[in-house]
Amino acid sequence: MLAQQIINGITQGSLFALLAISFAIVYGTLRLVNFATGSLYMIGAYTSFYVVRHVSSNLFVSLAIAAVVGFVMGLILERLAFKSLRGVSRIASLICTIGFSLFLNELAAVIFGRETRVMPSVYTGTAFRIAGTNIIWLQVIMILVAGVIVIGLQLLLFKTKMGLSIRAVSLDYKTAGLMGINVDRTISFAFGLASACAGVAGVLAAFYYNSVFPVMGTLPGLKSFSAAVFGGLTSIPGAILGGYLLGVIENLAVQVISSGYRDIVGFIILVVFLLVRPRGLLGRKIPM
Amino acid sequence: MKVLDVQSLVVFYGKINALKGVSLSVEQGQFVTLIGANGAGKTTLLNTVTGVVEGTEGSVRYHGKEILNRYPHDIVRLGIAHVPEGRKIFPELTVEENMRIGAFIMKDRTRVQALLDRNYELFPRLAERRRQEGGTLSGGEQQMLAIARGLMSDPELILLDEPSLGLAPLLVEKIFEFIVEINRLGKSILLVEQNANLALQVAHYGYVMETGRVVREDSTDRLRSDDAIKNAYLGIG
Ligand SMILES: Nc1ncnc2c1ncn2[C@@H]1O[C@H](COP(=O)(O)OP(=O)(O)OP(=O)(O)O)[C@@H](O)[C@H]1O
Ligand SMILES: [Mg+2]
Image (cartoon, rainbow over all chains, first blue to last red; front, side, top):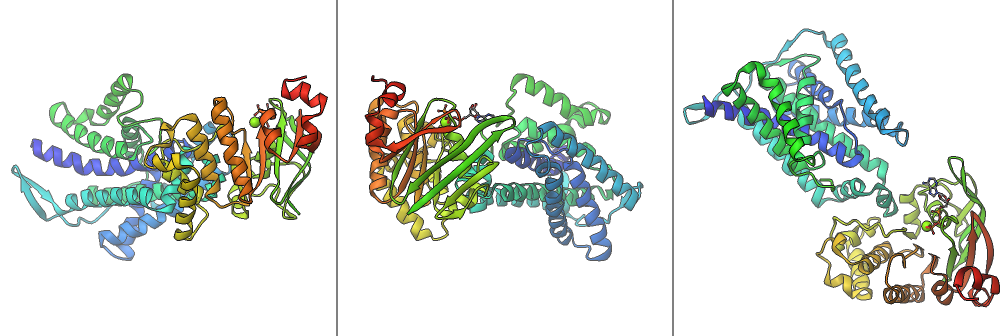
């Protein structure tokens, strides 16, 4: 049973980690929290619902399409919530992301219906057994997908010119501009990237829980925000660590305490942790 | 021939009128200095030239072409490097990464490498510390890095904003030697300085700003021997 909960925790942690990365990228480049992250996750999930119905039931096709949809949604959101409000006030942008989130959730309810839609089960075969626990292929795939994205992001950030732009803009956008970096375009790209991560997480969640519904992103969004804060908010490795820790801790708490407390355990840990270490786990003054 | 030609430039920060019609120009290969007290508007002028701050009126021409209110990332592509006030190196990036970011606009890798080599030659101290994080350098080294980074875009015109700020006198002289050397290599220079004494010794031509206006301009020889300038800016009467 314990092994089962740890495995479940790591799988769920992959979802939290992807969302936490999304928060960290946006916060790193813009110093703003994107509270619509959960809604982008929901949109990723609905994308996969329709891709499965009309295009292909292959999980990877859904992932690719949802990543693109997420990227584009991110660009739109960035233009509306950030670019148009840049220099006005941070609070205005923040509220705009909350508004955008509510709007997207409502829009989804109107277009897709409020009821929960069922996703097909895929890759349910047992991959291997550890300590008497079955690990199914879907779990393996989720963990691998998260891993590949994380490595890909690190390569992008540290080995490419776009990555250098993102890092420079996140450190000091004014000086980055003087170096010839197109600050607006860099921020848009980073935002799109972050949103694509959220969309991918949504697809994985849709297949893992076999369901999609309009407010499915709210709780994971809040939880992974706390995971990101736990990890330091500007650090991608911190966000990953925070995401996986939250997943495992939550699932262990279900085992030890009661499943009724599942959703608040993460928040309690976050508050206590931040009282002790306000910078978060890997937080520095320095982003990424 | 004028490389940079600023005419009647007006800049506001909200209601604050920081530049009230400033005109200034830099000839090809010339070393021009702009001096003036705190808050005169020197940094604002440089920032407006490179698009960091928006100008409301007037013109900024580069080789005769209007560039007022263009994006900073476009300005640097034209051949203007801005070494900003307070150095603004990226402290978390290594010396070499800082240098390479200065060459961001360069597509040709071999050219970047050549520039890197040339600037390391000019600043051997930086070559020794190329793997070190920029933030761990001493103040003087950071200033050298800021200048070297500016040179990495192989500019024709370099705007320098108070490179002597916070440096010990000996280091200031060293930095100024570098700037003179860079000018000798053919780059036109606009140097903003509070250290008027030194600036007027090394530059060819000088402008004096007071509260948003240019109040004097002349060759530095004449400015140096002017009693009013001596009293107000050189601390010798
Ligand atoms: N971002 C800003 N917002 C509002 N006012 C500003 C801003 N930047 C500068 N100012 C004001 O504009 C005027 C000119 O400032 P500027 O920084 O250009 O002066 P400076 O000559 O560079 O001074 P210093 O020698 O101290 O660097 C000052 O009165 C300053 O207070
Ligand atoms: Mg200044």
